[in-house]
Length: 456
Ligand code: SAJ
Image (tube, rainbow, N blue to C red; front, top):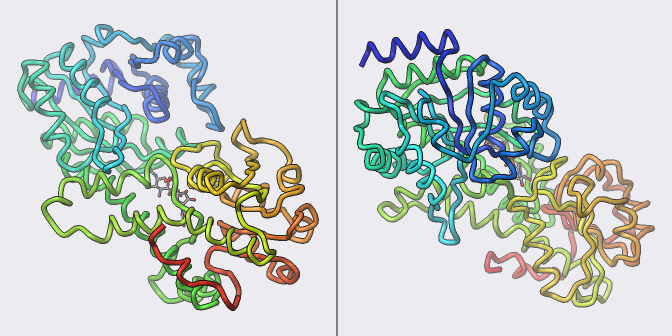
C-alpha cells in the first residue's frame, strides 16, 4: 500500500496524475478548472449534453457573477488540459475521481441520493485498480461507509483500501465567490485510511492555499453538516429573539447591539427567512443518522423557527394593511428581493418564494422586483408605485440607498415591511409611516400577539 501511495504522490508532484470530476455544477466546474490550471489533465463528466457542449466550447454554463471563472474555463479548455464528456468510458484510466453531484433532502427531510448512487455506480464500472474516489458533495454522516463504499465495491468488484481508496472532502464554496473560496477556504480531507487522507492533502495542496486537515471520512461528514447546522441554529436564535422583541415593543437591533457587547456573544441578524442550497438542507443531513435513535430536538426546532419567518412577514403585512383598513385580499403588494441572499441572483429555497405564494393565496396582487434576478429586474420605483405596501425580503445593495420618505411618496398607502433591518437607521422617518420591521414593530397597542404563535 505504501508503495502505491508514494507513486501517486510522485505523480501528483509531477502533475502526471489523471483527474476526473463527475458533476460539473457550481462546485464541480470550478474545481475542475482549478486542477487543470494547476497543470493536471482533467476530464469532466456530466449527464447534461448541453452543459458538456458549452464547456467544450470554453463557455461557462454558470450564470451570475463568478469572478474569473469564465476566463479560467476558456483558458484551460483551449490549452487542452480540461475537456468534458457525458461518457464515463472516457475516465476509465484516471487515478483520482472527484464526485460533485447534488445531494438534496426530500419533503420528509431525508437525503435523496439518486444522483450520488447513479454516479458511484457508473464510476465503479470503469474504476482503475488503486484509484482514489473523493466525494466532495455534502452528505449525511454515515453515507460514505453506508452508501458509497458498498455501491463502489459491488459495481467495481474491488475491495475498499485494496482495489480502490475512498475520501470525503466536503465542498466549501459560496455562489459569487467560487474560485476564491476554493483557493482560500480550509478543507477537511477525510480518507478511508491515513495514507489516503495524506494523498488527498497532497492533491488539494496544488489548488488550496489554506489549511488541509487530514482525518477519517466520518469526521469529515460531521464537520461540514455541523458547520452549517451551527449557522442555522444561530440564525434561529436571532429570529426568535426578534419575535420576543416584537412582543415586548422593543427594537431587536438595539437589543442585539448591546448583547453583542458582552464578551463571547455574537447574535446574528434576524430576517425574513433562511434560503440557499446549503443552510436549509445540511442540518437535516446532520441529524439524519441520529434523529430516529436519539432525542434530537434543537436542530429541528431551529429549522422550524427559520422556516416560519416568511410566514411572519405575511403577518406583519396583514398588520400594516389593517392599520389602513385594508386586507391582503385585493391589495397590491410590492415584494423587493427574490434571491435568497443579498447581491446574488440565486433563488434556491428563497424565503421570497414562500411569501409570494402565500400572498397570492390570500388574494394579493403581487409585483416582484429584484435587480439581480433576470425576470424581475427594473427600477424599484416602478414596482412600488401604486402599491399598498412595500415588502423588503433581501438586503440588496440597491435597497440600502432608498430614502424612506421617497419610498412612501410612491406608495398609495405608506406601509413598509422590512425583512432585513434595511431601514433600522432611518428611525426618524418612521413617523407618518406604517413601518413594521422584523424585530421592530414599535410600541403598537392592540397588536394581536397570537399572530406570533409558531402555528402557521
Ligand atoms: N441569514 C440570516 N441571518 C444571518 C445570516 C444569514 O437570516 O445572520 C440568511 C440569509 O439571508 C440567507 C441564508 O440565511 O437566506 C443563508 O445565508 P448564508 O450567509 O449562510 O449564505 P450561504 O447560504 O451561501 O451559506 C454559505 C455556507 N457555506 C458553505 O456551505 C460552504 C455557510 O457555511 C457559510 O457560513 C456562509 O456561506 C457564509 O456566508 O459564510
